[in-house]
Image 1 (tube, helix red, strand yellow):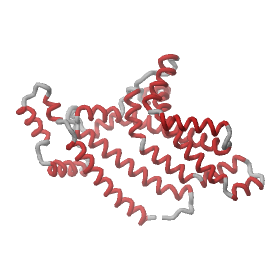
Image 2 (image 1 turned 180 degrees about the vertical axis):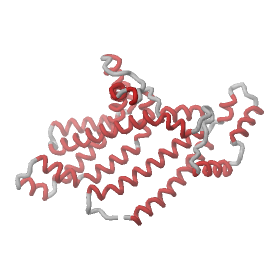
Image 3 (image 1 turned 120 degrees about the horizontal axis):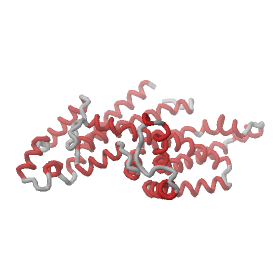
Image 4 (image 1 turned 90 degrees about the horizontal axis):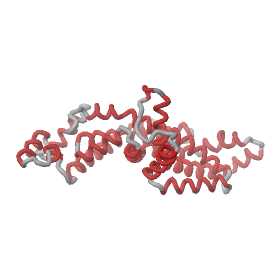
Amino acid sequence: MAAYILRRMVSTIAVMAMVGIFVFLLLRLSPGDPAAIIAGDKATPEMIAAVREQLGLGDPLPIQFIRWVRDLVGGDFGTSIFAGQSVLELISQRLEPTLSLSILTMVVSIAAGVFLGILAAWRAGGIADRILTAFAILGFSVPVFVVGFFLIYFFAISSRWLPVQGYQPIDHGFGPWLLHLVLPTATLSFPYIAYIARITRASMLEVLSEDYMRTAAAKGASAYSMIFHHALKNAGVPILTVVGLSFASLVGGVVLTETVFNIPGIGRLVIDAVNKRDYPIIQGVLILISGLYVLINLAVDLSYTLVDPRIRY
């Protein structure tokens, strides 16, 4: 196990190095000049050149990259070009809404997805299974922002049951916090519930068809015991894999959902930074997200032994 973890950590460093090079070059070589944006529409070429020199954008790309990596290793993610604040400070200010939405979404997605998948597998070919199939097709086909607009119209505009947009910090009260997250969570969890439910159904069907499951049924084992003590545990590895991938891929959905519901999270921060060509913010967020993605994959790989003790590294 120790040797496996060491190999994975070495490969993680290599992956993060490639991500860093890609992020740096992607932003530098894409169209647009942040110095021109900062200087304003009426700026002269001399003013733009002065701003570029102040930001260090006039230096050769290798020099910019070495300086950026040096600061990154030292824990300095840079300073926002427009806000004038530390990138880590800006991210920390937007972290609570994004974490609240992401964690609540995954809790709902896992609970609902696994339950629906088990129900569909246990009643394979029945009404529940057909409803889940239709729901999965919708979940895979309908974009997140379309689901969000429909939910806003029916539950916020028409019925006025829930707030249309915005976010309330949890220290302002658990009720307002949860109330403002109901629609965003339902929107963001829609495709993940369908995805987890489909994988759970397929894994459970494969396990339920095994001989030892038929033997357990012949011995009079209860439905609860067959599902949760035998089938779900043996079907857990594919489910755990898709849960980890879903959690790591939440980033794209969070950006869209925070935009639709006007939530001041990291997704909104990234959108604003892209529009303003704020290099430090974009780079800092992408590096942190990439590191989180790699760590989640590592955690999922290591947790396989908890689900299936037969797995050895």
